[in-house]
Length: 161
Image 1 (cartoon, rainbow, N blue to C red):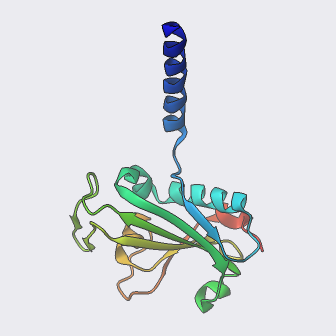
Image 2: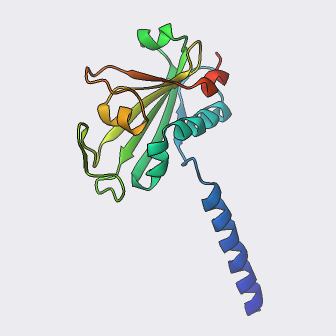
Image 3: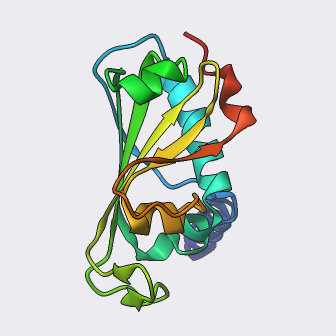
């Protein structure tokens, strides 16, 4: 009888190991309020987002919130890019991060910060971010005017509307 318990425990540990090895994209809380994107489209786009924001991928352990809101686009700059639906991403850095420095020169405090991004396809697929910490964390060009910086990500071209 005990061997059956041990075998079951071993199988469970193997399953956990393979899950951890494949867990490159964190589990996002996804809310769809409109638009034509499917949940599958959104999940694929979030995987591409994390791949292109390598700093975030490297420091996933310091992120305590992963949310994605899908809704019709209304901001003129993004509408001009051909984005009719946006994926609005919100991440939160832990109040006590382990690997992300609590302050980054030129950026400021990181602990407890909310990061905001927009993901879209259309004519110019990519990622935008307005806050300096968001721009830094995703490798976007820094913009100190408080306006969005854009990073072209052709892989997101599948987000057609």
